[in-house]
Image (tube, rainbow, N blue to C red; front, side):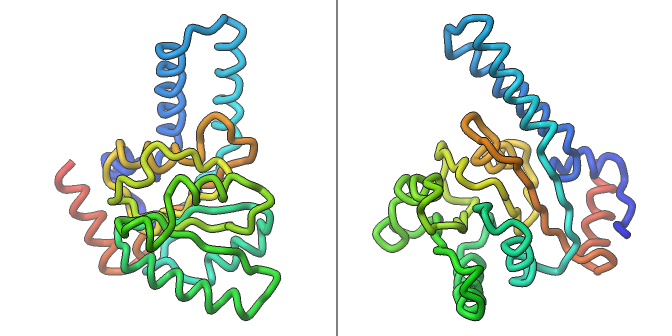
Length: 219
């Protein structure tokens, strides 16, 4: 059972407040109206699309010490046709995840997909971000997982609606960063139910207790 949180803490962490997803949709709507001279029917259709995305969106909050291979394998088994993005602020963490996934996928051919990585590394080492996004959006391409370095600007503005699952391996502390990350999959062109999975320190751990106490004291 999750540790109770002080209300300011839950308000501050967008990952714990699905209502903020609707606020993101409102911003998207306003931007659409401002940037496009569209008919009233177009705007109504756009609003209906956003509402359907909001109503269908799934938000999961998983307490764990860290992102574990078993969690990714479980998601692959439950939703084998869904592509996913795994985000972390640590490039070295993503490097480790890539190696683990490669090893785990070798054990079960039915789970295997190609894994791409977009971070602060030079494009010639990882591949061009826009090329990786295009492959992710191609349902016939075997690229099924993108590891995303959240501190890098290389992914900003990319449309990655080919993925419908976003895993935030570390807490996201600012609304702007959260909006950008969620916006990679929750945007026009998305035809699938989106799932946002948030990994936090294990419930009952010292790390989690410290976060609850510190956030409760400063808000």
